[in-house]
Image (cartoon, rainbow, N blue to C red; front, side, top):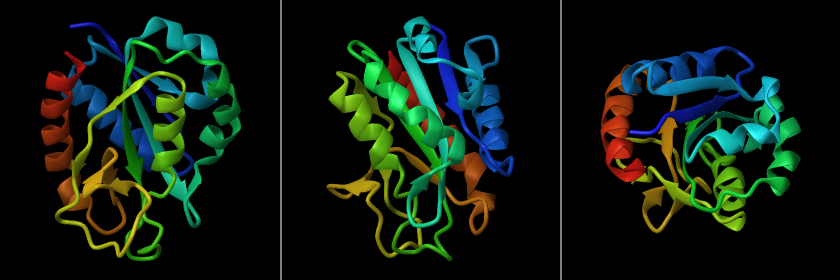
Length: 168
């Protein structure tokens, strides 16, 4: 299987820590972990399989480093690439904007010719609404390290199993 690029942005360390867990579950020899603050758009030329790991701020904003990098995605050709999104959010304090940053990345990848994979079921969450849900499915893996940290490892394991099939 081809190497994957796991690109994360983290302000408090939670997203970085979860991205490390994802890399470990995938296998460090098969997955590169990259901080979005340290890359240029040329990094996308190296990977056909990508995971974007992002945290949500406020009422649906991208994490600061992702926010700064986001305009560079306009120059990326995602044609032939499969991309999955993993997002951290807070269902208790933002129940009607939980992980609302996800569609920003999903729609950009799709607009630029990529295929988004890694959709998950919306069961087991306590949010009231999110833009990260379409057609009863979540647009990626949503995690809540503040209120459901005990579910993170099991959700990650299931998602890695799913991605192994979808990444081909």
